[in-house]
Image (tube, rainbow, N blue to C red; front, side, top):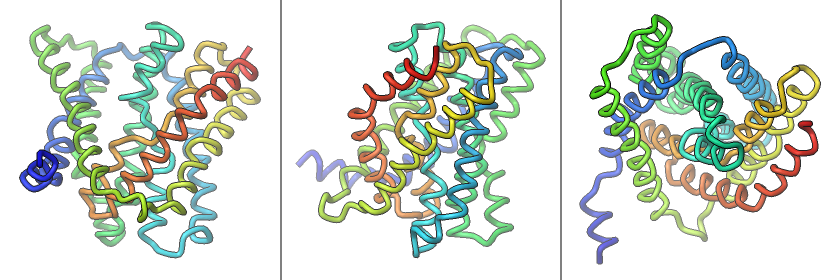
Length: 286
């Protein structure tokens, strides 16, 4: 009975709009002003983005051979490389590496957020708009502008009042909760018999195998990162798909239920793969 009332009376699209246009900008602004920007932290998100962009180029080469339907191609390109670096990556970093990892996981999460609001928004929006309109749709997402504002404030060393900082933190945590509620609403409507296994398993392969492998190759053979930062990077590359993918899929009417199912598959696989990821980190990073 409770499920029926919940489903009938709550409009999930309203929650998506509330999250995307109000709470997520607060989360982005809070995260970007929480830790001072310096050169030491710049290299880790840069390497993260290089690994993601190299993987994206590979997906662009083969996505049409894997999926015949254009919508599935868009979901594949938009979601496969977007990890849960915030809601899961930050607390997991604390659990594995201690609180010292927070500055690194936070700035990597920023890089992931920028990828979402540029590339993922474009691939989702192109199903609803033409190329020009899809590109313009990127700039209609307030998260982009709040990120720019936060970086300007952080770079110039502008101090945020303590009471305002507390309010921002409350909004940031509210954003995380609302995202999980949205995920639950869409997940409730996913039927096991109609799971998009072809889509889900291909995306999970990219997220849990291809992207970490590309990252490991870059870290081991092309950088001189210390083992601590390298370990954090590998972990962040391997985390499951982000719940935020559902928000964008719903916003642009791009099969949000299939995206929710794909996130479920990715998260389940991550639980079983976590032990192997930890062993890989120990082996490759001395």
